[in-house]
Amino acid sequence: MSKSDAKGMWSGRFSEATDAFVAAFSASEHYDRRLYREDIQGSRAHARMLADCGVISQADATAIMEGLDAIAAEIEAGDFPWDPALEDVHMNIEARLTERIGEAGKRLHTGRSRNDQIATDVRLWLRTVMDESIGLLLRFQTGLVDLAEREADTVMPGFTHLQVAQPVSFGHHMLAWYEMLVRDQARFADARQRLNQMPLGSAALAGTTFPIDRHQTCAELGFDTPTRNSLDAVSDRDFAIEFVSAAALTMTHLSRMAEELVIWASPLTGFIELPDRFCTGSSIMPQKKNPDVAELVRGKSARVHGALQALLTLMKGQPLAYNRDNQEDKEPLFDAADALRDSLHAFADMVPALTVNRDRTRAAAREGFATATDLADYLVRQGVAFRDAHEIVGKAVAYGAAEGRDLAEMSLAELQQFSKVIDGDVFEVLTLDGSLAARDHVGGTAPAQVRIQVRAARQRLATG
Ligand code: ARG
Image (cartoon, rainbow, N blue to C red):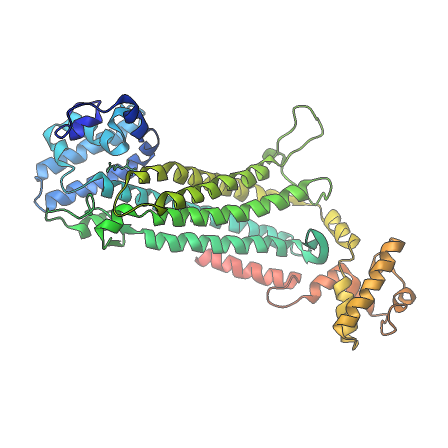
């Protein structure tokens, strides 16, 4: 086989060399070389199995192993002669192997195809990525739980429609983020289970005529079971779609968090201070401290959503079995994985390091009649029907808005203009801390409940 021409791989059938444009158009080595470790790992398992089954000699297998090890070292050292004319990572490595060890190198591809090879490589690669994603999610979750504990008693306004709604604990808000990440983690773990089946041995599409032992390669590569259908195994990329789908949802969660961080870091609310090391300045406005990291995470979510759309569309028109369309899965997949990893990394470091301006969050909760529902609930406990209580409090709020005073700042006589059943004990429910503490049930915002959830989360994080 000629060193720098993929046609060497199929020269028997062809009477002219590949058109130069077509060669460049179909080459993928510049990005799929990223799979070299998995490609070599799969080739090693395949060669050992071929020798153990008597398909190739043990001597050939030994030469192949040594050759592949040397190639791995070459690639790691940056000395590997990547050649786009050899199309992809598979043919680059195989051609180099034959160049290094001669005849034995040509026997490696016995009973195998690039179709089952790439399906195996991507699964191996993605399995590691999923495990890393889960690790990053756990690190971020731990940071959020620490922050939640630190800020369990911190009062902030809770919002609906971005209007002040009811006071909540800042720690409770952090645990809301934590819950999103718990579900995200479960999605990766779930997708990993389905991904962990081994396509090797499916060959091009129908299996192979050689007496191979798929259980051996399966065990060596750490898969749970060999795939049960060769046509399906070489063609479907649903496992990649599942990963990017889980990643897209995680990025949606991170993007929502980013949006809140941007709002909270703005002087308009002044709720939090982000560490300087995670912010950037302006080249013209000396006063600026910008939350760029949060904005970039919000921006990167768009790339991951795009990758999901690309992969879904890539798959939908493909008849069984393998089609070259599938080569187009790698760039969106890699891009999504990188964006996810970097975003999780950034937030796992930055978010737990933020400081809360507790006076600001408390003052903001006081500004928006955040305890209006507490007053309505109080009236209900005094025997007023909730709808009537709602109406009464609405009038009190309108009065307060006109006077520029919160409910807690009115005198008892003033409050009694709206309902005679209001008593001196009303002020207990009108304080922010009283409002928080009153929501003392599973899932409620009472600091006591936040601490219970923090303990449960720590338990879960410690035991997995
Ligand atoms: N590079 C291809 C891919 O990424 C694998 C090669 C299979 N090519 C082929 N013509 N059968 O899917």
